[in-house]
Image 1 (cartoon, rainbow, N blue to C red):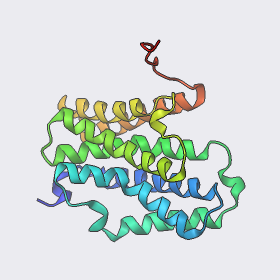
Image 2 (image 1 turned 30 degrees about the horizontal axis):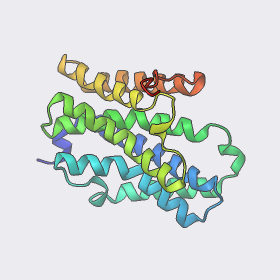
Image 3 (image 1 turned 120 degrees about the horizontal axis):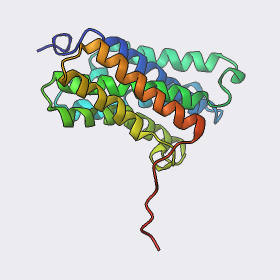
Length: 208
C-alpha cells in the first residue's frame, strides 16, 4: 500500500518541516567549524535523514529519501542557504532552536508513519523518538561534540512527549491533524523550556 494511503494528510508537511530544520542544524554544525560547502551538505543530509532511515528500516518501510528526490534537494538547498548567509544570522542558540523544531515535528511524523504501517501504539511512539533523536545524535558524533543524549537538558523526553502524546490522542479518537498540532506543540514547548531554563531530569545518584 502506498505511503499516501497509510499516512494522514498532514504528514508531508511535518516531514518537510522536520527534515528542513534538522538539515539546517546539521549545516550549522559544520559552518560553525568553518568547513567547506561539501561538508555542510553532507552534515545537512545525514542529520536530516538519519532518524527517518533507522525508523524505516525498523518498521519495514522503503527508506524514504532513497525513493524521493525532494528530500536530497531540501537538504542541499538548506545547506546552500546556510553557506551563502552571514555568520551573524546564525549566532547564539540558533542550532538548538532549529533542532527543537525538528525534534517535535519529526517525532510526531515518525509515530504517525509507524502507526500507518501497522506498528502497535507503544512501539509506534518509540519509533517517533528514534525519528526525532537519531539525526541529532549522528550530527554530534560527526562534529566531535558530546552527544545530545549525554547533556543534562531534557531532549529525548521532549521527543517522547511529542510521539507519545500523538499516539495517545489518536487512540482516543482525535483527528490526526489536531493530534499532530497538539503533540508537536507540547514537545517543542518542553524542549524550549529546557533550553531557556536548563531543565533536566534527576541524575542517577547510586554511584559512590
